[in-house]
Image (cartoon, rainbow, N blue to C red):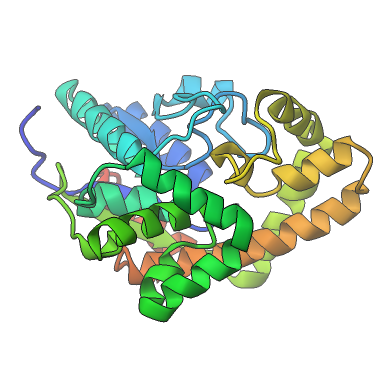
Length: 312
């Protein structure tokens, strides 16, 4: 492990489709031109998967050639890539970047990943396969809403943390029934590095326009075919739903590929779900990461200062 940096490592986060990748790339290239190389550590729960390129708006080959990226394409879609695996890999990437004399920037919008990285991994016990199987069977028999209601009756905050994610619900109940506590009640190990979260969002009308435009472009640019490929690798009907199929929009893109939805119908559904997700991202940023949400111009000024770049 290299010596700890004297200043916190910047974390750039924003809702989906806000333009955080473009901002990070532009400033990283400017910094490199000034003689201070920058490398990006992605913090996205779905760009970790090989093959999920269009639907996740993953940086393309040219962008990755311009600025080194880490934690992209590190897992197969058949895997359930965990928060703990991400945090360990991200800390290793940050350490490697620092050891080579470069500046890391963490860029992404997955709240659980960013919380694990900035606050440290939760001190929850390891999974118990047998106990998990029991809860998975209950999920199939009773449904997600019933299990969430059980959690909310005891701990509303923990229920909100689940974000209706079946795997998180199963894990939470597995831990609760074995230990009497929910995962969020175990606390965290100290993080390996110090971070400064820089968050921004465009005004909501602009963000919605960006989401709509990007969704239409992705559906026209091969997303349905990518969803067909994913279905050939992982059964979309399996319960609990495989992690790769929890990415926004893939089920709708799959329905387009099968002729079950028209592209405009799929786009409307994806935009609605994405809009709801962006609001949850902003809530997580404020409540869990404790960050102020700035304007794009405001966050750019802070990031430029963190990289030692002059004001524009």
